[in-house]
Length: 288
Ligand SMILES: NC(=O)c1ccc[n+]([C@@H]2O[C@H](COP(=O)([O-])OP(=O)(O)OC[C@H]3O[C@@H](n4cnc5c(N)ncnc54)[C@H](O)[C@@H]3O)[C@@H](O)[C@H]2O)c1
Image 1: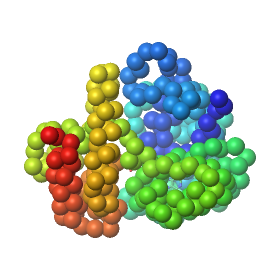
Image 2 (image 1 turned 90 degrees about the horizontal axis):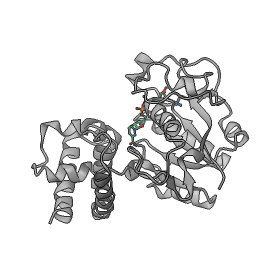
Image 3 (image 1 turned 90 degrees about the vertical axis):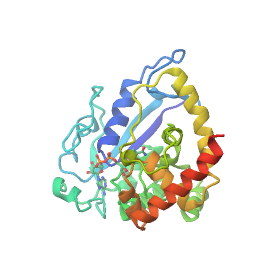
């Protein structure tokens, strides 16, 4: 099988973890349990088959640098667990739009210069898939990039809470071009929802916003987690669209209820109510 050429939009902390992770697991053995990796090989591809092809950001600390350096440039501050060799992938100047919100504006200085030819770069670099890690709230920027991705004929993985993959309009446009599109938010396989339900609370815990992923779970935990996740997904399909969005954003996206309310253009109270109703329904389905 060939390589999968991946471009990144938004070289922030998530991108740093992805790029480090691909390097860290590049030679992961296929016949052993590998902590932190659910699948060493997926759909025929080994994790080492991922190659980074292009990257886009707007921060002057990152634009123009090689991706291997940009992932460690301030204000990125995520944990460094792997060195990354020079990748030969310069970070190009993206399109700002609403990528810089009220708070990010205070810590990011935009790189000078005009927006790069995103379509041209994606085509020249033979990019297969574009992964978006834009900041929360970048609705216009996301839609702008999605248009470029469609023009360039690439697949798209949206890791941010702006709804694209669930919208019929975008589904149709990607399908018409025979291009894949996924919302990673919904696919993150961990059992936060089930853990939360099992704690048996009435879903009003003060620490609700602090939910965290377990570190390096053991193999049995991972196996159990995979089974649970299938159940969680099936249960989520029984929720209303609004309830599903709230559960995805809160538990898989790690957003607070206030952030979830902003993304869904509703109130904090409405989010809490939808979350309560959704979890009560899921509890009935998941915990006999
Ligand atoms: N799917 C998940 O599991 C998951 C988990 C955590 C975070 N997220 C989401 O991923 C996104 C990124 O999170 P993060 O922690 O890496 O954020 P971050 O703030 O560290 O990184 C965002 C990056 O995007 C850049 N950026 C801003 N506007 C841009 C534009 N218009 N074009 C190109 N680049 C632009 C910023 O300069 C920054 O480098 C968030 O939306 C977050 O909600 C998803």
